[in-house]
Length: 133
Image 1 (cartoon, rainbow, N blue to C red):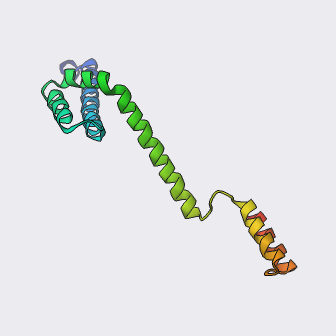
Image 2 (image 1 turned 90 degrees about the horizontal axis):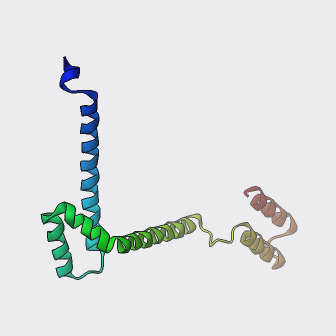
Image 3 (image 1 turned 180 degrees about the vertical axis):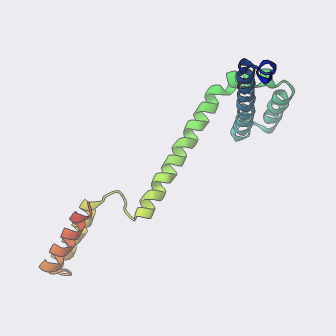
């Protein structure tokens, strides 16, 4: 009896409609985030906000057509900035400036040539550095 009241196609249709609704809400949030992230003036942002709120489907469509490329460029720039910040943080946390083993061996050879390390200490430290790679 339950199967006839709510067929499987109806369940799929309901799931599809919920998916579309959630995607629409996410798109609205994304547009508002992009709108206030842009370098547009205050009145322009206010007008776009009112337009998107009063005519949601048309407003979102027009915003994506007009500002879609700028939205993509801002997203790419933000991603590149985040990646550069992450790489800088990793370099700082690792304590290296990108030279790695060659820089460490050069510093060790410099200490050995200045007489700070004797031959035995130099060989031990060199073996330790080469073993860590």
